[in-house]
Structures are given as C-alpha cells and as structure tokens.
Image (cartoon, rainbow, N blue to C red; front, top):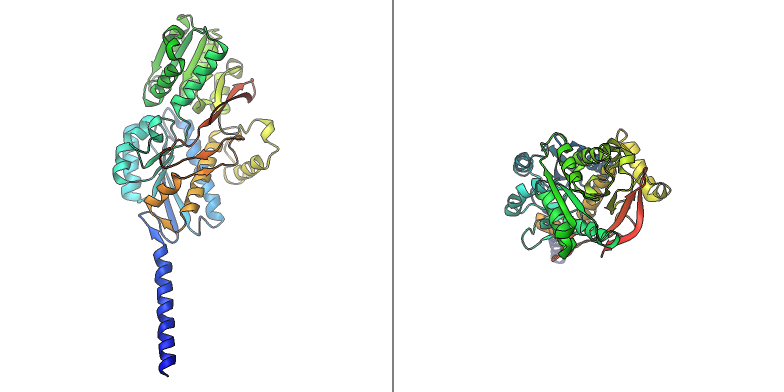
Length: 401
C-alpha cells in the first residue's frame, strides 16, 4: 500500500512538474497571449502621401489570410493600423495610442523618415520593437543608437550613391540638377548622392531645389532646375511630388537623363499620372518584383500573390507595387513571430528580428534579408532598372552585397 501511495505521489509530482515546465515555456509581454498577438501600424491613409495607404491595406488583408489559416503558432494577429496623414506630430499621437491604449506587442512598418524620427526616442525608451520601418534613413540600421528599430527599405544614402556611381560610369561630365523633399527623407538621399560623387560633386551638381510636403505643385522648382542648364535630373521625391515633377519636366520640353527614388516607382500612382512618355527612360533601383512585368507572371510566386490579391484585396490595383511591399513585410513579420515561438516577449522579438537570414517570394532573385545584432541593414543589394514606357526593365547592373 505504501509503495502504491508513494508511486501515485511521485507520478502526481511529475505531472505537476511537467505542467509547470510547459507553462513556464510560454512568456508574454503586453500585447501577446495564448490566443492573440497585437501588432500596431501607422501609415498615411490621408494627406499628401495617401497613396502609401495601400501598404497598410495590404498588410491588413494578409493578416486576415493568416488568421483564416489558424494564425501564427495558434495565435491570431490583431493588426491595428492608424492614419497619421504623413504628419510627424500625428505619428507621435498615434504611436502613444497604440502602445499605451491598445497595448500592442510591437510596431510594424510605420511609414516615413520624419515620421519615424519623431517617435524614435519614445520607442527606444519604452523598448517597443519598431520593426521593418518604411524608411531608408541610415538611423534604422544602427543597433548601437537605436537598438529597438530595424528598417525595411534599403539605405537611402546607399541607394543615392548607386545613382551617383551610374552617372559617373555612363556620363562623367554630366551637369546634374537635384530635386529633394525638405525633410529627413530627402536630405538623407541628398547626402548619400553628394558623397557618391566624391570630389566631382562641386563640378557636377549645378543646381538643387527643395520642396515642402505642403507645396501645391513642383512647377517653380522644375523651371528653376531647367534654367541651370542641367542635362541630368535626380528626383529624391515621394510619390505625389514625383508624379508632378516628372509631368512638369515633360510639359516644358525638358529631356534630361532622369533618376527616380525607389519609393516612387509605382506605375499606376506615379508613372501613369506623370505620363508614360515623359517617364520613358527613367532609371531607378529595385529589390521587389514588378508585378506588371510579364517575366514574373508565369512563376509560382506571382501566382500565389495574385491569388491572395484576388481573394483578399480584390479592389486593389494589381500593378501597384505597394501591394507587393505590404505583402512582403507582413510575410517577414510572420516569419519572425514563428521563430519567436511561445516566447513572445519584446526582447525575444527583437532577438529574432536581429538574426535574420532569409528570402521572400516576391524579392528579386539574389536578394536576401539578413540582419545581425551588429548590423540591422536588412536589404543590401539592389538592381538598376529602367522604365521602357510600359514596365520597369531590369538592367544588368547590380549593386551591393
């Protein structure tokens, strides 16, 4: 009898121990539970950069797909996406709401350099994972000074230096005019471009013009830049202003060699409003597949994306690359959450995001997503592209690691 009693006692203790151990394996911070993961996002659904709202919509419906399939490790994603109108002050307000009222576990892809700069100090102090920031500002690749922030976009200074390098290779005596947005976004590009030209910068840049996001048109800037005698024009501009600038350049009969920031390569929301004839020949860089390019439309990766679009995002434009951007960012977050498993603490989320070595279906061949605790630069390789009047053609020029 004593033996049986002892056996039962030991068995009971073992079961309790296993239960405690299993329970201990699950670790949660605010925003995570056995059933749910709260994710916050801020994007301009209104204002001068409202075309970027398509990214937030794409992420929203991608998570709908994930939740329909059972979620991530059995947990549904509650995605809370708020509008800041591309106004940094509003970004601060919406960030506080997401963290302090909604209680999100992390922030995914807040958009804009100035907007994210406005919340940079707050998220570092609160130790909120600030993941895949929709900005290429260099500060999002700096784990020493911003350990809780990881960018998505390739570095703006690196991208700009690619345009400088291509100009030096193909047109070493170019007279360059630069149009840039007068904030962290445009200034980061301009700094990288000037650095990329090296000791030829003073000889080659003949004119620079900036604009505010409240400016109604780009007419004055373009007329002024043309008057400089430049034969090469570089646009470090966001979508709405890119469309205006390219159109004005064409309207006044100016035909410089043109370079366009990657953030503005959308065909339907930038190139078509600007005029495809005016845009023909423009250079940019890419790391995502252009869904309007026939070469990708026969691939499984494209077909999977198109099937998702038709089921979950049917009113969206199939040629709009914001839908590829949002789709890919959401996929990467799912990858990070799967790696985190049942340890859904903010510290572990950052650990997983800072140790990536993967790729995604809609990235161009050869493009990888790689981070280390000492290097948060996610995308380090870019391919030069050129608009042929219908789609962006890949050139044979690839830059980066």
